[in-house]
Length: 368
Image (cartoon, rainbow, N blue to C red; front, side):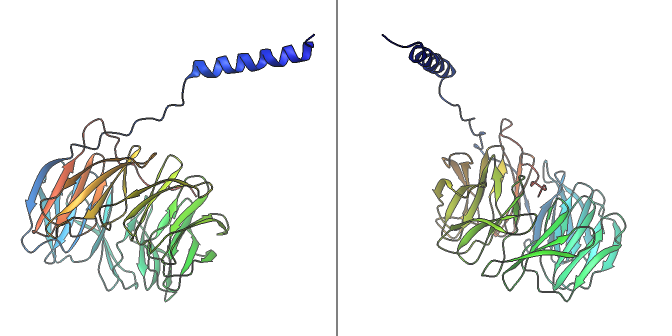
C-alpha cells in the first residue's frame, strides 16, 4: 500500500511539472535590428578632423585646422563655426567643453558656439573633458572639477599622479586610472581620495559602473576585473590574452568589453563568469556602443582603405551583421539616440542612422 505521504509528494511533483510545461521555455528578448545601417549624410572636411567627433544628440562637433565646427546631427548641415578653438571635446545636452593641451578649458553654448566661460585649469594633457550634469572633469597632469554652469573650479588635484584614463562619474564618486596602475576613487564633491586599487599595469580604459555596486575595469595587466565601488576591493578577475584600452558597456547583467586580441567578451558582472565570447574581424577602433540589447563596435577593415561597423547581440554574442565604411575611420565613433558619427580618413565626417525599431543608445550607468 502506498502511504499518504508518498501520494502527496507525487501530487506536488505532478502539479509542478504541469505548471512548468505550461510556462514553456524561457524566452530571451530578441536583439534590436541594427541593420541596415543607413548612411544619412557625409560632409567634406578640408584638412580632416583633428579632434572629435563629439555629440550632444542634436549637434555633432569637431575641430579642424584650429576651428571648432558644429553640424546638425539629423542631416549634417552646418550650424556654426568658431575660429581659434583647438583641443579635445566633451559634450552634454546643455554644454560643450573644449580642453586645450595647456589646460585652458572653454565652456561653450552647443546651439550657438558662443563661449559661456573660460578657465585655466592648470592641468596639461589631451584626454577629452568629461561633461557631467553639474561639472566638467579635466584629467591629465592631475585632475580638476569645474562647475558646468559658471566655470568655477570646485576642487583640484594638480600635480597628483598622472591620470591616464578618462574620468568616470559613478554616483558620488569620480573614478580615474593612473600611469602607475592605480585605480583611484575620489569624492565627487571634494576631490578627496577615498580608496585606491593596484591593477598591475597602466590604466587606459575608463571604469564601467554596472549599476549594482561594482566597477568593471579593463587593464593592461591582461585582465578584466570587478571592484566593489564602496572600498575598491576586488570581486573577481577574468584573464585575457592582451591589453584592454577601451571602455565597455553593460547589457542586462553582461559587461561587454573588447580586448586588443580582437575578441569581444560578455562577462557576468556579478560573478565574472563568461556569458559569451565573440571574435572580431580585427582590432577595435573604440569601445562597444550599446543600442538596446545589442552592441555596435568599429573595427579595422580587411583592407587599409576601409573600416567595419560590426553588430552583436549583447545577451548571446551572436553576430548581427556589419557595414563597410567608404574610408578608414580615423577616431573612435560616437553614438546618440539612433545615430552613429565618425570622422573618416578621406577628410569627411559621416552620420549613420539605425532602423527605427532599434533601441536608442543609452547613457552610461552612473550608479556605483
